[in-house]
Image 1: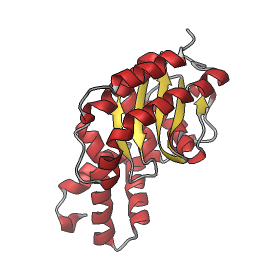
Image 2: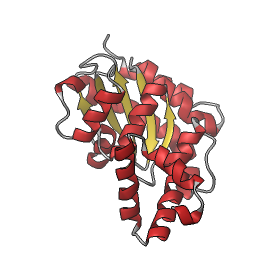
Image 3: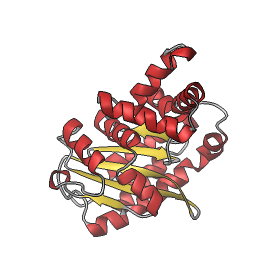
Image 4: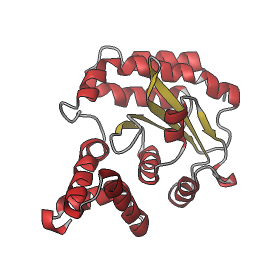
Length: 237
């Protein structure tokens, strides 16, 4: 079924109307997923890790999609944010040569997902995040539909404007769901990077690379490694 992007954009606007600010990402994410006829969706801001925040995931598969990209530092979400344009992976089974680690992880951990799309979220001329979409079928959106879906990303940007100041100031951990993953993406990873850097005399970039290498070695996610580090006493890191 061809998605009605005008209807989807309207659903996003309605989802963000007259609700508490902490409810906006979850409601908007659900509206994007339903409005575009996808099997999962995520919203994320500040897509350059580790200062990256997952705002909402519509279901477990969408959450794992985000975790995979967060761990391997590649994939359509990150590419969309860097390029400032929609990115399509129409058939994951056909291979993802641009992102070999992402492709391998998706085929291993989310074999039921057959296509993924990412839409940049703009605030003015600045890309501050992206919307990720997944489908259990190949070619869920054609080229024209993906381009039109940018209207939905624009509606997401408008809906999130009311949360922008709180996000950028980092004044407190937003009460957004799933809370433990938001913390892992936003506050805890930065804390763990700092702890490893201080203990081992590394730059933050090298500390983060070491943590990612451990995630690859163990088959876990970067969030798993973060939790393990923060559970350890300072001298053991």
